[in-house]
Structures are given as C-alpha cells and as structure tokens.
Length: 202
Length: 262
Image (cartoon, rainbow over all chains, first blue to last red; front, side, top):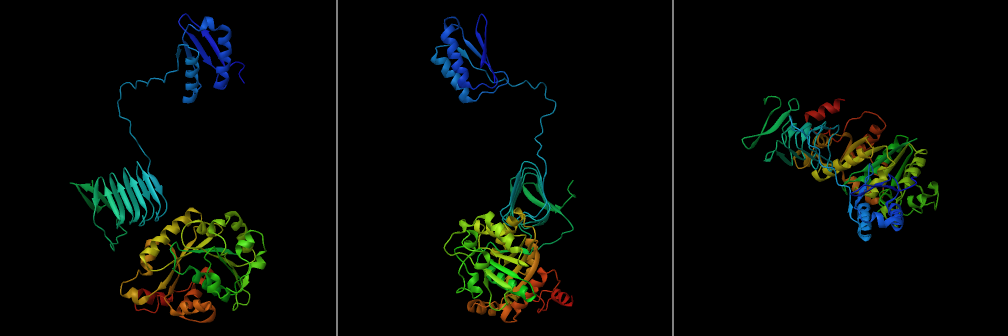
C-alpha cells in the first residue's frame, strides 16, 4: 500500500499532482482535501495538473477529480488522451487479413459461420445452416443451406436455399446433380453467377 | 457398465416411444437386460405403450428427489421375464424440474445393473432433450421419410455432436415402399445422403404396430410382422452384428438384390 496517495510538485506556473498507482481515488481526494485545508492559501492560486503515470483512470474517477476541483474553486488540467502517432510515410496500406476458418464437420441446421476471411467446410452445408464469408467459401460437400461470399464459392454440389456471390443472387439449383469427383466454383462475371469446374478459371 | 442410449428426433410424432419400447424389447430377445426410462416429464406415454399404466407407483422423479429407490420405482414388463424394466416419468412435474447432474448420476448408477439403458426423449430441443442426452453415450435418431422430420433430425444431430454425443445412428421409421416407389416420400438413401449419418435400421409402415401400441403390447415381443423383424435387426446392429435391411429387400431394385445376397 502506498503511504501517500499523491505527490505535489510546485512550479512557477502550476502544481503538478502525481497520483499513486493503487490508492483509491476517494482516499486521494480526502488526503488532498486535508492538504488544501492546511496549505490552500499557497496552492489555491495555481492550476492543478493531474499526472496519472501508468495508471488509467475510469471516466467516473476522472469525473470525481473534476468535481473536486470545481467544488474547491481550483483551476485544473486533467490528463489528455495521447495524440495519435504519425505513421510516417505509408509504403503499403495495412491488409485486413482474417484467417481461413476450417469447419471439420458437416454444418447442420441451426449452425452458422460468419467471417471476414475464408471458410473451408469439410462436409456439407445442410439446409438450415448458414455460411457468410467476405472472401471465399470452400465446401467439400454439397451446399444446401444459405451461403454468401464476397469472392467465390467452391463446392461439390449446389442446391442452396439461398446463395449470394458478391452482390449477385443465384437463382438456380442442381438438385439431383452429382459429380463428386470435380469441385466447381461459383463466381461473378458480367453481373451474373457462373458455375465452372474449379481451377479452370485463371 | 451398460450402454446408455438416447432415443430422440426433434420432431414429435415420428415414433420415438414405440421405437424405444420395441428396440428395448428386441434386445431382451437377444438375452440382454434392458431399462427404458421415460424422460417425457408431464406427457408420459411409454407406460401406455408397454401396457404398464396401472402398475406405475413411483416415477423417475421420485427417484431423483429421494422419495424412493430405483428398485422401488422400476416396473417389470409382462412378457420379457424381468429382462425389460420401465422407469416412468412423472405427470405432476415439468421438464424444468429435471436436475441434469442428478439425472446423470442416477442413470450412471442404473447403467451398472443393465446391459442397455434407453432414454426416451421428449420432442423438441429444450430442457427435456438436454436432460435425456446429457447422460447418453450414444444416440438413436428417429426420422420419418419427410423433409420436415429430416431437417429436425439434422438440427438434433448437430446439437448432440455439440454435447459430445458423436455416436449417432438413424432409424428411418414409417417407411412406406408404395409411397416411395411413387416418389411421394424420401428414400433411405436420400435421408442418409442429407444427414451423413450411419443407418441403424429401417422400420416399415406396419398396421400391426398401431394395433399393438393401442393394446399396450410391445410388437416385437408378441408378433413377427415386418416391423418386428426390423426392430430385431436394429437390436442385432446395436450388438455389433451385421444384418441386412429387410425393409429394403422385398422390392425389385438392383440395390436390394445386392443387399439380399450379403
């Protein structure tokens, strides 16, 4: 436990008040009140600058200080949030890179995955399940549920209840179609969704 | 330590209770000692299906709350010579009254005395389902060949997997060959394709089940109809024996010819 809740350093322009790291704010203010009662004549004329060091004060704690200073008719300066660091010259824009999520089972009715990256499902996406990805979706099975991807959707079969790639909605279904040997990819070209054998695109 | 198996479906009316009674009955024919626990608190039925409604004095809830011992609450089925026992559900409580920890503890203790303990789950995925699946190491998911039942089964299998019950197998119930040949119902292949879960049995639509259930007789213990045969096949499969699916093998399809030759 700190013996004193704060240290006061007087300069010609202000009184720097460095508070301890652990003493509760209520105790600090009580101690300050006692100090001011004894020496308020000297210090009361100069503004108080609050220094918190490593300690982070909550909004309520800061408000408590503010109220205290106002009640005692003192000028004050609360710690300011640090200004953002100048990043200097940016050579490469930061890449928001979400990892690929791997789901190692069939997604069943009521289960869902949403990500800013990619999703790999080792199994089917059943009716009633949902997958939403900003990037690509790869399904080692049949898509029967609701899927949306920003880039593309690759699967062994497309029987979705709803499928969106980019902002284009797919309106077909290949119910009964089975060609488990070839994965195919749904992608957008000229504003419509094409489904072609995967890997043949580029 | 016996196997603890939850019989569930999500959807109501697919035949969980009848399946529980008959699969349990079929196992006693293979010389196993079986306990059936009705988990449908407030809406009990298993006692009726087994024809034991007048014999129930204490319920599973009485056991859980310490008003009697399990031995006092268990009721003996008439035809199985003491190998088939029932623990009835309370009609006076709600499903919320089931304390999961107490249920687990009680079922674990009972599993020491039996080869099989079946938990007949209520419909739905709420507390009654939680309480029925919590003690189980294995699940039988009952589906009928309808899209509604298959979707609910899919949801339930997902929930069971989340709870760590990974050994799920399917019983396709009320399988009607004439409707399937007319493409009015899903085939068992369609169902397995969607659910990706192993098949434990296919029980054909059989009027004898309705009749036996209304009389309070367990079909498999009193008659040998196609459905009774299917229940015996399920019992064999639970015991690890390979058997064919007789419900499929009476037709003319190429697949069924191969299955028959097994």
